[in-house]
Length: 400
Ligand code: SF4
Ligand code: SF4
Image: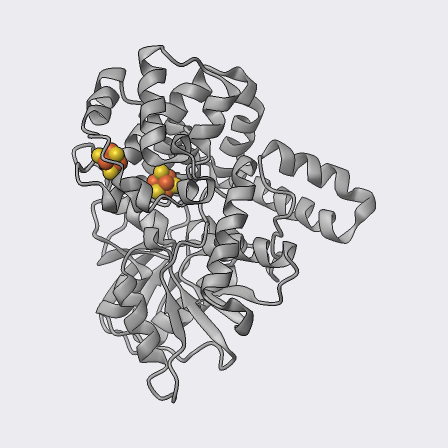
């Protein structure tokens, strides 16, 4: 829900202008300009709310170039709720600027709370993505959809797997039952883009005697919508997910395959029952660590493990890597550097994201690796887009 001006102004007033956030803001580090830093954006929003700065293309560009990596939050001594400020500023900006309406409807169509319409939109996107790369005589349609949705034309959408989308709504029973039942939130990545990872995760967890239910009516967590300032639509999605998960019985906890969605669910306001979850939520890494679920390494090749700071739990990821390679003479390297992912649906930040990916690639000597194994689907999408468009042979894949 969009908050009122007074509330946002109070959040802004907590900022002491110390500039600490500039040390970590990747967009500032690449551009070197104050206006592209966290502090710069906060001051822009301040001017916008007070009427000193008008709605303009430039204002939109400065606000939307923030990658939502959340690193500045960790470094702010005044605990300024920057995400709340920027989300609300974007919401005001787009609701007062009708030029973004087509984009908004497409995004709402793709990520809307109705699972059937999301299915159709995703299918359409993936089909058009394939047209772009496989059939040049048909690619105009695909390019138009990509452009309208604000998706980068260099983005490569993976093949639709055999059997199309993951079989939702199924209770995956197990033989050596430990009496633990969990509900799985797959996220858009686990449902539409990488259902084979969901399959692998389910297989591994079931083999350890834990039963999994994948609620049928779950929808996109709403993060892509709120990043775009579509706060009302994001709330509808949260509402649909709370309904889908709060109605479950006999379930111990909710596990999220998408770390960003898991973090969002944990932060839900517990005062509003329509927007909060009854069951405890854990990200997949917390669940795997707590229940000591072991699995074999996916690759013997030269690999590098990666998890972005926004996913959190860096120590748990490191421990997991050490555990799964315990019998090997060399444990692969792990990096928690920000790779430039998030906000993938905004083409205006394409150059910044690619510059960050380039420095991530060079700093971590990725030329030597065959695979980068990532904790989040977003990193995989972003890094593979960078690797393929830069003709680099390394590929990003998931832990599962
Ligand atoms: S969320 Fe990331 S990109 Fe955005 S202002 Fe904070 S540090 Fe910079
Ligand atoms: S670190 Fe926090 S208080 Fe300091 S300038 Fe950045 S947002 Fe403001």
